[in-house]
Image (tube, rainbow, N blue to C red; front, side, top):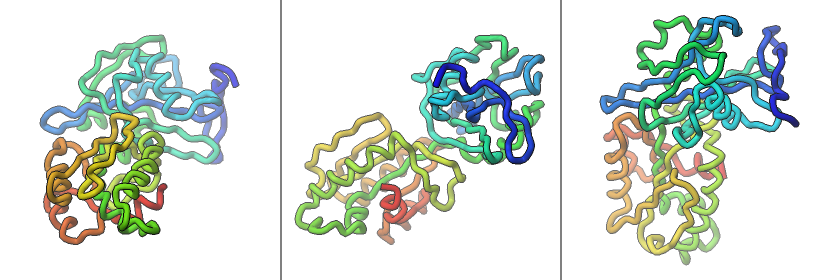
Length: 290
């Protein structure tokens, strides 16, 4: 395990030659303007590089000790002077060639960040609207992946009807200690915020992992618990009245470009949130990932 031990060419099972002995990864930074238009940051490759002169992502070979996110963020810093604190990872798309894969890390940026070529591997860095991308001469791998990636540029918000999920879980004795059951479930959710959701519900683009913003709605006896929130992806809402009303308000409060998924089995609530454009899935989807 050493720095740059991923550098080198490899053949995939399809007989194609790829750079990256342990696979490769790139960062697709995305910013949505107020009208909802996504802009993406693309790199124009130096003429001497593989597929030189084409547009693609800041990225490259992953070292043996790196996961795709670590590798993509490192490459973005080396090639575009972007630092990890400027973006928030929202999804991971995998282009698997059999024995080799390129992983695109989709990440939100709060603005059109300043970026410029930081080494000799690029001749230009440019923010482009999603509509402009296909008009460019694209790196062949990025061109193949772009139609699928384009559908996954909108960040995901998952709103949890925690009382309903606890009931569906049917943990022994939960009805006698609803607050305790809520606290235990929240503790189990923590790894999902860092590790991502690996099962994509119907209606969403099929990414290898989603890293959503999570809104947890507490009602009744569970409002008094003091959950430990270990990152800024999770928001806890304590419903002052109806939990359903608080969930509907959370759906309404989303930013226009965000996709919302509500986790509940309550029929009435499902009708209310789908009328607002939200997707819905049942508690089993969430519980199956714990």
